Length: 300
Length: 276
Image 1 (cartoon, helix red, strand yellow):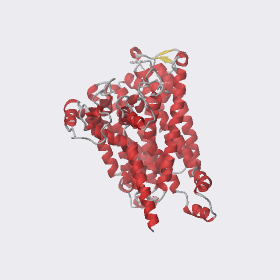
Image 2 (tube, rainbow over the protein chains, first blue to last red):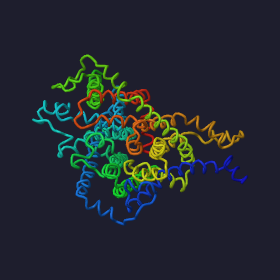
Image 3 (cartoon, chains in turn cyan, green):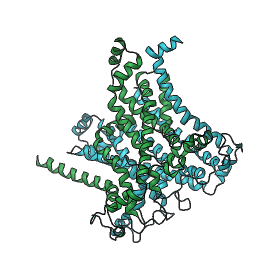
Image 4 (cartoon, rainbow over the protein chains, first blue to last red):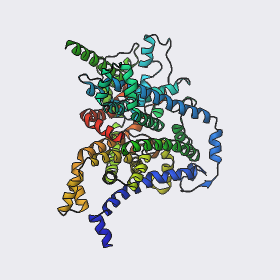
């Protein structure tokens, strides 16, 4: 007993205590819920059976029900389209801005920092702002598009089944651009100037320098940024809640919103858990690849 | 010489235009909040506000319970920051101090927990918290759930701050007769102060704007934060966009102000954490 007190006071026991405290917390409020989620996905859980921790086991019934749901294939494709389009545009616009602000001119880093104002906004407020910007009759985006001649009639972004998912993608791209830009800017700043100087002496054009120096040197940063983009996009929920609520008729429904809707709108927690289990596997898979690749870089 | 000056001016002008386009939604929020009930629907839209309608703000403060919503947001944000910082700082310190296989495993687990989508975690948390009685105190339950989400991010950011502190300073304190906890509190924490404060501020902002857990775990309207207060406005066929934007502006202006003041610290804190 005295030895334990001694090691906590003066030895390694102090470190063990500190890290155990945090790991215990994370295990209780993140690890256990993941495991409990798997159990829930095999159970029948509704408003009446909420009071108890364990419920009637129904085997694969919830999984079968989810896969046979008429919405399932729509949600599957929506999730892929939403993730791919969001990450593609966030990354391309973010990269273009990072390259632009990497040129040296007065005020560059200060103005670049202003973009992060979008990143610090609560997701729900961003969603509400875009809800207003994309309003059908009085939205400023429709007015700009019409006065520039791109469209003849207003697009009803939020209530047209062809456009509802695009509406959320637009909001998400705006929300994600600053984060992409700033991480890519850090990568660009780390490329040594002498590489470009040497290439200039050899007569390389800007375009050649981009393909032979910038892109290869940025490979690991680009990988990390795209992986993080996928992870954050699969976490995106607030924008759906504020712009379309997954509708109309499920046209903008993605998996992370559908899981919540099954649990908290239809009170079928078992089915909500089924989607959560599958999505968590996907997210953890992406994260494992990302963490492993970046860890190897820093190890060297 | 004049060539570079011309180039710089053009580059700067384009940069300002790009930033203006990007920040237009924020501008539009403030402008809309100051318009009359009819001028928000003007075609073409009025890009400059006429006479600012400050009454909308007094209306919001008087009628929409915004004070109560903001107080709940503050309560949740403080709770999340406190739990995250108290539990997370020590872990960040240990993860920065050692390099071995167990630390790698712990770090890997922490990084993996950072990516879990809240809207998926909330189903098991809601069912478990309900049956265990934690949701009898919904705001506390919400704070516990959000903290599990913010803690990995906080640990990664603070670990970067602790790694910059030379071990020799702590060892000197130990030689002087301090206990481990004494050296940690008197030497290590003060030296890592800036990094911890920036990380805590980012966590505070996340707690202040949080939506998923609050919306799912807090049923009592009197305990709900401002993010949910906003969604109460979003009924179908809304017309009071000036009021909604006034609510939004009141909600986010403190966040934007904190961001403008601490911009440089936030940018460096964010980038050091995300890529290492």
